[in-house]
Image (cartoon, rainbow, N blue to C red; front, side, top):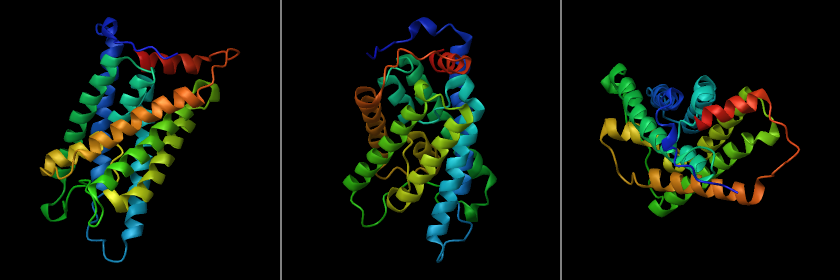
Length: 256
């Protein structure tokens, strides 16, 4: 049974605000990586597939690395869709989740602005702004963003299920791999958002918001749906399970 915790009783906790800052700081570094690897530096002609794989690897490993770096403090969401899923799934309290989303979005703008400031004007291109590809209907793009975010958040719920007893590095590496898979599949369609903050940062810096709503509504709905589906159909209440010290630390990080 999932209970929704508003979380106002934790607002005076130092660990609560440390977790918010970790998401903010992590998203600065994440968008620095995303917007950097998304630049082609002229390597576009005849190398589209290779570029997509390079971008997918860069973003996937960036998430794996940064989630490992800040996960013990905040849970390492670095994605508003994951945070909303965690609220719906009862893994974090409502206030913490909302502040995570705000912190992630602001961090994403700063990270994108750093890449913009450090890149020659002739090579900035679109700075990794996500956009629906020519010939693809906006409704199709919305559906794809929803579905692939569902895949991501469902995997996050599964890999972090305490019953699996997955080691922390295995957890973050697994998440990085599923993000790589999502990117190599979805980049040709929508540029692959599956993370509202990842789409929001470059859009703000480049003032490019065409069809931007699909990169918020699609992933947020997909994340919420994944949480509901996992908790209703796949969560196993193993009463024989004895939590380890590692599990207790992860619970403190995500609930503080």
